[in-house]
Length: 309
Image (cartoon, rainbow, N blue to C red):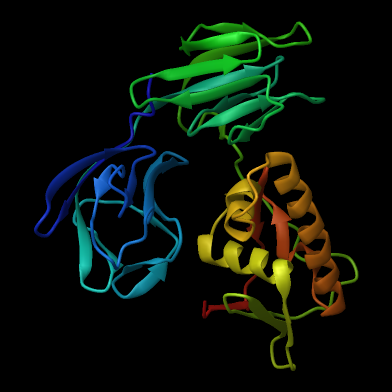
């Protein structure tokens, strides 16, 4: 069972393309929709299934719909998305699956598999986005079906009814579920705290440059700071929505290939960033967890965010 997500798009002068979940649009010749154009990034955008909808995710800079920038665009027939000035794709058809594969870990609730993810040890066992090195199981789709692999398991297909043993003797059970019947991998919590203890009240103003940010209460003089904490904040703004820590970290520390060193750098920068938020007199939960391994901006009504990067 694959994700079943599929979108048909047209690009003027380049014909019609059918793209599935995980398809990359970009300048690289290996991209699923190859656009050899200097205005397009190597990996410019990604087709993804999010909460039952087929969406286009901007990977580096936001895309435009009717002149308005977006980091995530739900796709519908007839929609035009501008990837770069004068370069647009038109959505012809969209098909989202009624059912997806889900996994139940050690008797917990079923969790839908909507992208490459892994089962990691803990109490309880967790399903996280990406492929961390300490995972007991790696799960991914090839577009046609789902596969699993682990330290003691060679890559093998999995589907509804499959049962795989976890290292503590309990099971990972796979089943087909209707979308909406389980929380997607890394789904955001139903509500976020409105204000961190001790934070100053009032709407915030955040102005993001490539290597610095300006932050403070709306109507008050902002504080400007740079360095890696500022880069983390800038990338979270540019990428939009809940995003895996590794995705952000690899943009900030591009020279680092070791996943454990990358995680240490991320944790250190996040600690320093939250210290900066306290120093600016604003709530620390401006950067908040949105599920296992995911982080997002907690933008409240009245807050303003400007991306000048």
